[in-house]
Length: 273
Image (cartoon, rainbow, N blue to C red):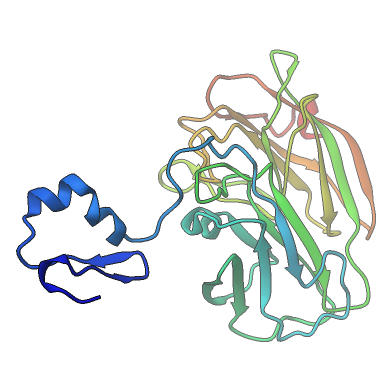
């Protein structure tokens, strides 16, 4: 019924307030709260569940992928988009038209057709987090190929500090020499993993290369997916391993952090042999 000052009309969750109702009354009744913009639900238990990758396109291990594919990564829940975009990487690196979103799906479209007969590794670093700030449970990656086979090399080893295993350290394998930018920061390298509670790591889908791989291990304290050598505990082992033929596996690699803040082994040390 419509009747003078007693009229209230619901439009979804937002109410029309009569002109003569004072702002004090409105605030007291909490009527303005019904017009608030949508957001995460208030109250209740805190979200502690790590987000997961629910689906990828191409699928992990898929071969003969169309060279014009738009890469998709679907998450199990709403994500903090900037953190995911910073954490996304594709190896070999290709120019992208940009990253965009369709709901919980991240889409990466290459500017040009992908090269033929090439294995690609798409990775989401452990710095990616959901809408509530909960990080993904370690770095995640999936491999696909525009040819008939997937690179299958592996590198395995351990990370320690003061002879104790390091849990949750980020490990990268980088072709050739590792360099820092002008601020002493190292960007993500080609292949990534996260150590277990025993300090163990496994880098998968490593391609064969005439150049030795250097290893980088660090504790990503600020969660930006990059190694700040001036502020974060880490270590670099130059020329640590060679994957000379497709499918080669190299084990027993040891990264022994020796300083509270970044350092590197000498090229002629036992670590770098």
